[in-house]
Image 1 (cartoon, rainbow, N blue to C red):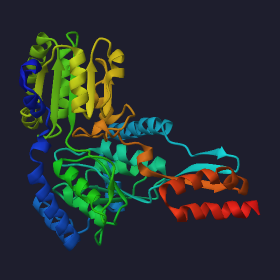
Image 2: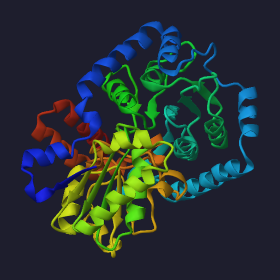
Image 3: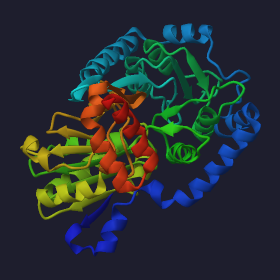
Image 4: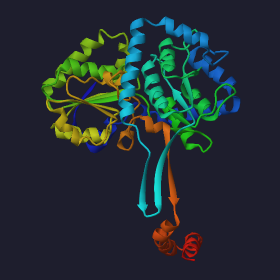
Length: 433
């Protein structure tokens, strides 16, 4: 990791330091993704097979996962892993169920009832990455809230393995969530297929799930197209920012940084501290722990675009964090709870020494599909409401139009919208007569 002192950087260098790797290559990524989307729209399944051969080394003759493959997947897993998936699913469901929105109604005037009703999105497309590592946890994070929302049609895409099968843990997690329609397609081409539809993969109303820079860019492009699909949020390459004081455990901090760095070379990790000794100790721990990691090469590449930043104070570290708006924020502080009110932009926050970000990735209960690339300034993580639409309803009795109609007439007159005025005035006249 680069070691820098924030006080010695000018504003331009500070801004550059906080840029994500994916943002630095966005122009090239965008043009590549546009070509992929255009080919899928033009050639459908044929394009999916060509891209599968090119990117995954396999072009399945049938993209859909059949019952036999689902059954084989369950038997391929150890009892311990099946139990862990089931346990995590229950905890994720418990957390998300507690935060579900509820319909409501209120009489805003005598004879005027306003309501808000909730309806599930009819067909949703879930993307579960499996490029450098399969992510059954993502199938749970997407599938559990989709099920709680009551979505009647759930489609899931995940990249195939070299032998043409889907990862068995991903399949078991999908089945645990009641998802039966799984397709072996990955990358930007999977996003295009779910957004526009092919002969094999149905068109979806809204797309969900994290991915690499290409997946994230594909989601952005289809969301900007009126013929495309809505998306949950920008959820791209993983990132973590750790704020640590002098009392933090260097081994814990290093492990947390590496747990994100090993996701992929386009991940980014940042460490902010006001203690030089802590920064030195974490640096030593990074090297020691990297030597034992099977994915050390991936982590090292991510660390090349990551930084250890010496700050003047924890207060300054929190200001920098809010500016960066990290996907994951770890407060390795002696009184982490006291610092929480000063956090204004973060996807998910982990308080203290005993809350590793990895728990949030798997089984604490919160969702790990979180805003990246600074989107935490205006967006939150995935939840049940993400899979629903809220519809407002108005029911007005004659006494209701009498009570609030004059208000509408005056506002319509002020705006010069005579047809609006007449729509209310005619009813007022009818009530009066």
